[in-house]
Length: 381
Image 1: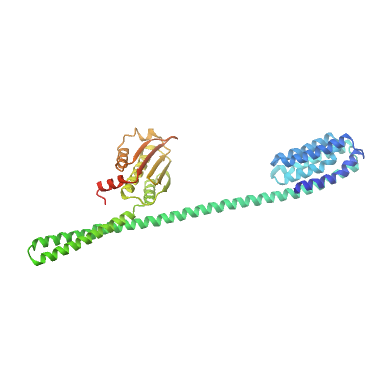
Image 2: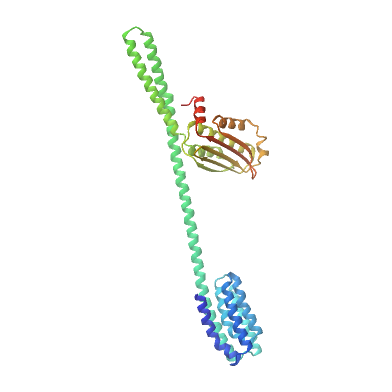
């Protein structure tokens, strides 16, 4: 709206030059020049970027062919100066094109001297207004670009901050679970062993003192120690169950497998606590799949995705390596071992070339009886 008002002011400033060029008569040349200048000025508002230079340059060409149009060069000067002020480089010299029709008209003697002076005044007014508006638009674009850059930097900083917080939480969680696992091992290996020996000794003394009054006391001691041993075992299993965090375990497996290699991993885990059998199975599949990628695939990137659904856990390991050519015919011991683990939990397992190349390992483990049966078959409670 501001540019339209400026163009109207420039057009009014050019009217005295137009009247002087026409000699006070409204001839066909005057009408054609006026309509063409107005149309090209409107067309310039619809154009974008450097294309907006075409309409004012067309006015300059018209002024070379039609003497009356030289009086309207102020309108062209406005658009040329406005657009060139918003550009950088050689386009800054584009307004010099206004000198061509003015010099051409002066050389021909048309329009007359007063009309030329009035046209120059109109060009000066249009050029000044165009430079002012162009400089303002340039500053506004720079401000918007700076705002966008700052917004992008702020978003990038926020994303980096989230990544650092997630990494910190992961390290804290990993350290916590590692400490719990260590405590569970210490209790199981030391306290559990001592209590088991105490139970055996108490039973041995009870048998040796059979028939004596002390035998009943030794039986009571054995029962008490046996109850303490059961409590210790329950505590150990509770600690071990707390240590089965899929998110932490899978990320730890990927970090250890890819550390010191050129393989770039991306990990997405949307799963929390899982039964020990499930966690052991899925982490073993991830470990073996990554081992196959490093040994056979000649890949540069591997993607590990583990998602927990209401009815199952879904694991996908995909690489961008040589596909079937790198992993053989799929009959290796590693693939067989992975499939056995998954099938034992009632799940499904597939391994083969991916749709977009590379190799894909897919495993899903359902919730329910399978995990309990497998855990008991392995001696876990």
